[in-house]
Length: 141
Image (cartoon, rainbow, N blue to C red):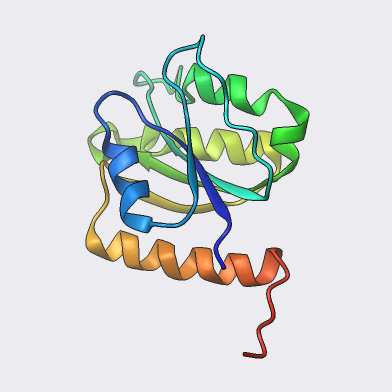
């Protein structure tokens, strides 16, 4: 069993395409501020792209900050999968690092743009392991 995925994706849809390829239960943090946030009923992994200038300012999307500002949602966060563009050098996937430090959870994986088949394979394996460890699944099967 995998943990739920909660993700933010801009209109480009790269992160949404990545999450769709993973399958499982996922919920999108809305782009529009007036739209309701997902509730995070179960432990989840956050999948978040990075948007920043060359100094790293604005790396975490405002809607993700708004989502994590709720203590009940933040408490169920298991870890972060960060997306980015390697063209931005040191700020590649920086949003994930910032979230992980502030929320005291690990960065579980980093991928570029919409990810590769290998990224999908590795993340699926990792999510399954995390689900078995954190969600109390029976590993004796």
